Length: 462
Image (cartoon, rainbow, N blue to C red; front, side):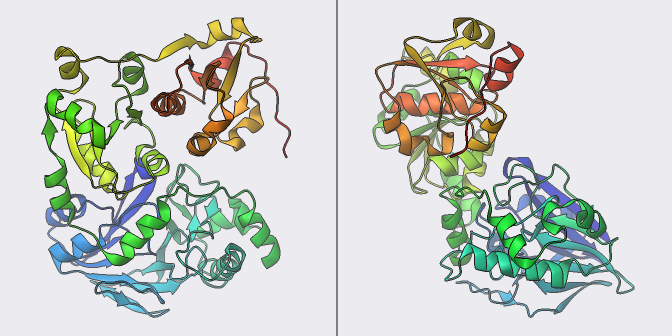
């Protein structure tokens, strides 16, 4: 028996490789197939199954491409319906894998077809359970992501309670829990940094698994849910209906344009800059949107760029052009019409203009307080401000900013902060593109402001 977790930090997503006697199963693969094919080849194994815990909403899965390339069977749990060939397993069905068996546990709640896969060892004993978005380490899946469901989130939360208590928590305490996501995923509320645990540990430590009634569970799990990124239901549809081969997408989208050609294409495309916040602040092309690759890149692209078919022009960090195109494709953004060849250096060398973000160190900003003729915009999530925010600051979470720009007076100077600067620079780039000109980035964000001795107030909940 061989098991390997393949964890991808950008999406906080865990895929799994399970092997026995030269037969392998892949659980919840990402869009790219190379990591799974190379791992199987290095071990001399054949991929027999692609197991999907549910129709994912936060990324485009690699199930179709893996099946095309290996002949593997795509397996979903009861109730799944797709526009391509799948094996819809029955509850309790056991799939043979070498000397192992994988038992399908139908666990509706996150979605109606959600299922966990219980790995039975050579002796038939439960070894580990692959819980997808049903059970996380420290949390459970959110019950509001089902696409075109006639059930409310309360209905699904009740189903999740039943699934957990009747299927998952009845497993032996020493069974290893391998979830579909870790901290940073928006598929839950309080996910741990840990990426594995045991049934017994989760019974003791997971807030959602503590003794409570079904109604209390529904209240706890649905309380405080914020709207998921707008791309979630779109990705779920893609995973049900099918998609173009990732190889074809990569070949088409890795097109490099000279500064002349890039500038000509800008009239009909969104320029997306994936460099770090410091590089963007130092020099950027007017109208471009900053979403750095070294943050939650895919999530913020999916949050702020509503149209999956939006034509995109990319400015990538040097040497990371292919990575940027791939990470866009993972969440369904496939219409990349070109990358700037030579990056900003080539753009500037051709005599074309760049802009700079005005910035101020946190300590210097604190010495300016209180402000008389300027305002403060804090783009952290509302939950983050429970630890305090600057007096008089307007809190508009970055995810909400495009729809709430009317609340921001364009005639005054705005000092903008988040926690560390990543989201603040994205906000400034977004606002600049909408015509705001009096914007200043407070370097280091909330963390640096506290260290500089800024006084904070705790907002009153509505």
